[in-house]
Length: 275
Image (cartoon, one colour):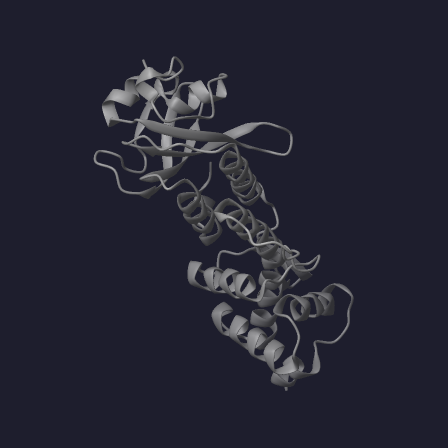
């Protein structure tokens, strides 16, 4: 797993998982051949901190990946988990976990929940947790956390080191609020949804917003470079012009990006600031 686990998108996935499961702690686990590690922890548990490690074979996640059930509400009586040293070490009663897989099937971590009391988990909830794990996998491995900048050799792509967490969080929050997506809004159901259904819809909206975020951050990079703005100011300008023009931030961002790659001018209201 990588430092990108500190990204607001990962925070959103963990928060949604916590609401979904209703457990004391949800976490992202990292594994190598011999060690298990609590990489990100959402919630509070005595003796459990980020970075805590154990032997891989002693962890619930190793046993789940090795064929154990994806959840239990009575770990002490579950053959797959009863003798796991970490169960007694932390006092775990309930566990649910799913793998975080790359597109080629490689497991790079786990997305899990634990509780000291008995908490049942439905198959539907496990399904939503798997969808959240796919969001984490896509974010951790994405190569598109990039923006465009002009260099002595022309316009090139670089990483988003200058897009601080607050700017990225603002972008993501704005996209979620507007329910933006490259392929259109997720369709709204005709019938009222139960809690799991509402969370599944929230996951779909998060997936769409994360996809749209890439284009917005590229546009921020273009505007920051052309107009000599800080990334946060570039985003505010982009958002202000989009709303004044009655268009979506994502759609306007696409025009900004195309102004570089297709050699077309910036939209008029943005271009005015160059004068």
